[in-house]
Amino acid sequence: METTLAILKPDTVAAGNAGKVLAHLESAGFTIRGLRVMHLTRAQAEAFYAVHRERPFFASLVQFMTEGPVVPVALERDNAVAHLREVMGATDVAKAAEGTVRKLYGTSIERNAIHGSDSPDNAAKELAFFFGHSDLIAAR
Ligand code: CMP
Image (cartoon, rainbow, N blue to C red):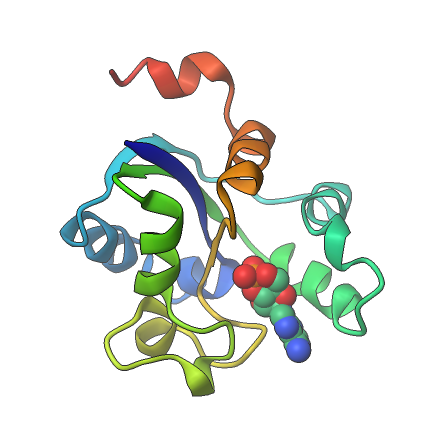
């Protein structure tokens, strides 16, 4: 079993699609091990996406991620990191496959409904950003 981090982004929460996306993820075999609702500060969004600091879309991304509440979720299943990326679809909604979360609920390359960790190492770091150790083992 592996655990990865998803964030239901402000577009998903504002549109009232958080429940549908969580149901989609559960149907895809993920077990929810941690769940929060929070409104990221600018400093938190900048820190979370620090790897993109030099990219031209960084300021816009931070603005988007702080415009309303997000739902960080710890998700467990076998091969969770790779499987979540498949279930999410391509970053750019225009390139996302039919039936993926981004195709169903995203509207652009930026407002793409959901974030998912891109490697097991980053999943560990990103889970620690939002959840304490006891939050995640408490559900076992
Ligand atoms: P995410 O998987 O959360 O990782 C970084 C985010 O930056 C990405 O989803 C998009 O929301 C956003 N992003 C990536 N590429 C672009 C781009 N070319 N233009 C605007 N936003 C982008």
